[in-house]
Each structure stands twice: as C-alpha cells, then as structure tokens.
Length: 590
Image 1 (cartoon, rainbow, N blue to C red):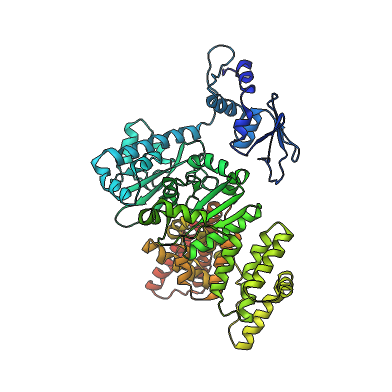
Image 2: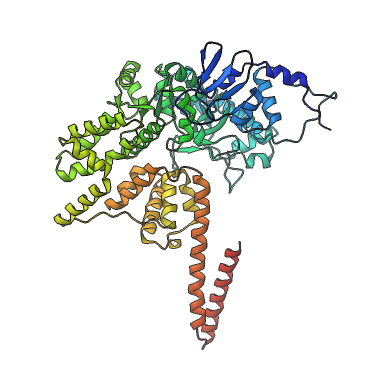
C-alpha cells in the first residue's frame, strides 16, 4: 500500500516562500506588512491579490480565490495535490517523507516528467553533435555565419540532428527508451515510427518558463522540405501557452515592465545576443491570448518586431488589438537596413538594433502611417475605407479619452472634420453602405462578405494555422470539396505545400479577388480559429470526407438504380458499381 505524505513534509512546505512562487505568475509588490499584485486567476487592472506577511496565505478580494502554497500551485498548474507537493518540495529542496515507513509510489500519471526528461536528454545530445563532432560542423558554420557567438549557441543550447532519419530512434532505443514511449514522443513520424521528423536540421530546443526542454524546432539546412518543423503539442507542451526564450527573458521583462515580441527563434536570439534580453517569440503560431496572459501581469508595454511583409503586418495588427484588449501600451519597432534583427546585428551591430528599439513608435502612429501610405489620394472613398480599417483599433482602446484622442489623430491625418469621423465611428455600417453606393455609381463591383460554409471554414482554419496544412494534404483531395471557392483555396494550399513555401502573404498573393483576400484577413484578425485549432481541423476534415463519400454513394446509387443489364460487359460494370458502393459503405462505417 502506498504511504501517505507525512505531516512533517506538509508543515515544511507551509513555511516556504509563497511570494516567490506567486511571482512566477504575477508581479507582487510589498506595501506595509502585505504583498499586493494583480490576481493571476482573473484579469484585473487594480491589484486585489493579497499575501499577508508571516501568514503565507493568499486571498483575492476580487474573485475570492484563497488558500496556501500547495493549493496555489495546484490551481495554477492544474495538477493534483500530491503532484503539487512533490513539485514544490523539489523546488525548495525539501525531502518528501511518507508515513508508515518506506514509500511505495502511488500509480499516478508521470507522463509529463518522462517526456521532459527525454527532451532534455535529446537537446543535450543534439547540442553535443553540433558543437563537438565533425558531422555537426556544417551546421555550426552556418549558424556562426549568421552572427551567433559560441556563448549564445551554448546559452540557447542549439543543436544538430543528423541527416540519417533512423539515427535518432536507434540512439534512443540504445539508451533504453521503449518503442511505444518514443512513438508518442512527437519526435517521430506517425506513419513511420522509426523515422524522425527532425533530420539534417539545426535544432532549437524550446524551454518552458523553468528552463526545462519541452519541445523542439528544427531549421532545414539543405534539400527539400519545410523551412521549419516544430514539435506537435504534447501533454507537457502547449505551444499557445509557451513563448520561445521566455525562460531567459522573464527576469528582464519583470524589471523593465516591457517585452519585445518578435517573429521567430533567430529574431529572439539576435536580440538577446545584442544585450536586449527581454525578447520572446511565439512558436509557429500567431500571438495568442494564452501567451499574452503569461506576460500581462509583468508588463505595461509590448514592443512588436514582426516582418514587414503582408503576413508580418497582419500579425502586427492582430497583436496590437490583442494587447490593447488587456489595456497594455503597444509600440512598433521599425527595422531598416535588414529584413530581421539577425541581419541588422550582422550588418550594423548591436548599437543600431538597440537604437531601433529605443525609437519604437506608438501603435496608433504606426497604423495611421500605414493607412496614409495605402490611401495617399485621400478621396472621400479613401477616407471612408481608411476609417473602417482604423475603427477596430479604436474599439480595442479601453478609455473614452483615448478613443476621442485617437479619432482626432485620424481626422488630422486625413484632413477631415472630427465630428464626421465620430459620426462614422458610431454608425459604421452606414459608412460601409456609402462605400458600396460610391462603387455602384462608378460601375465598380461591390465587395460583399462571403458566406462561410463548413468547407470554407475548414480551409480558413488551416490558413489561420499553416502547421496543419499537412493534414489537409494527406486526408483530402480537391474532389472532396463541393463549394467552388473552397476547392479553389484548397488548390492554392496544395500548390504552396508542393513548393514547401506556404505563408499567409503567399496565399493572399495567389488570390486575385479582393473579397477573398478580405475574407482571409478578416478571419485571421478575428482570431476565430485560434482556440482548439487542431481538434477543429481534424473534426472538420472528417466531416468533409464523410460528406464527400456520401455524395459518391448517392451518385452510385442513382447509377445502379437506372442501370440496365443487357450484355456480359454490362454485368461486369454493374458488379464494379456494387463493389465501389461496398467500399464506400465500409469507409463510412470506419
């Protein structure tokens, strides 16, 4: 029988520093004999989360959450009571003592710990191959030519995965990892479990906030294939709740109360190497509210450093609205003389990159400058179009004073009366109707919102997270789609997949129709498909395939019903029809 955790252990934990644990989730400040901060359990702007010094208990006067250090950790990490005690004991170097003598461990799910151990070991092995072996030399030369020093390479534990796709499996099996365990690790192909998804790639370990390796990203060095491949989600790794380099940046983020959000691994690393150590990056996805909630308790300002292409600008706009929804100030870092921070670091040095950061512009100035560039003629139609694009940003502002001031800036930028801008802001649907009227008068086509059916929504869900494009490619064909626009977009995605060059900007460039471009950007900006994207895509693909099979069956049934057997060849044809129907019925049952 499993022993119970002793009162001795529980009492020892009760005296541990609760404030230090809470500080991992929200910023606490001491006022008198108590510590105060914004509650990590619910969003608030005024600190109501309270820890009384000497009592080691927390209480929120807003949502009424309260308890001790063990309960706090349980609630924040969503773990059991026992797992909470074990994790905290490890953190504070306390021995877990059990009653009734020796301890027989309870049967509990330790999958997360096992996979974290696997990823830590794999990251160390890849790092050794990069820095200490001949086979890693080409990758090491590549990354040093990109301007990274050995100190940076060691700090971020960059690595190299050998080109032999079976090498990793053989190596890990030799270290006594089971085939069944490795098959579910996210390191290997689902179809071919002996073959790693990472081969011949520069490896970027992804660390959680405590510095544990929980996932991998791999950049291709030569040959064909996606430029980057990232680990799938695992029990211990939720990419929408993880930020690259956060473990290195969290101290500086809290001290400066600001964060730089950039596009990818190399961007974040370049900032850190230049001494700008409060930069982080999303992980193959757009910036999510889960990632923002990690940062929001510790920052007042978010600096955005995305690419200047169409996809980068869409990501910037989306991130601005998301940050503003939590009442955070936003600035935009405008890089010149290079396409990304790493290139600027190489070409001009750390001081230039630092200068760009220090001269970041406010989000409203950035958005207005982009609108003025887009609509330079400032005709009445242009002014309405620009206003309709600007109004969602105004909506995201929490203060009426901010909204009035921002609308006034728009009026000045487009040389129009503030009263007219405010009126259109309140009655924007009427403003949109005026645009349609102007187009009708000019004989131009009126852009209508496209009605989204299930097939289109599936395609848009994949476009919103292009990491799932392989699911679409593997499980569906163009003939599975009934909607003409969904078929067209599927073909575009297939072309991008074959070329292994898929990005939102690339997809938009393939779409000639303005209304289609508008539909895609609108859906991405709305963040409709961010939550549970993978599950939604899988379920939608299943539904599309089922509908396609049912249509095929219905067509066959009509052919079979109307078919007349006259000759032996006719009988063979009918037999073939019946076999096809049986095959479809079998697939539908599966």
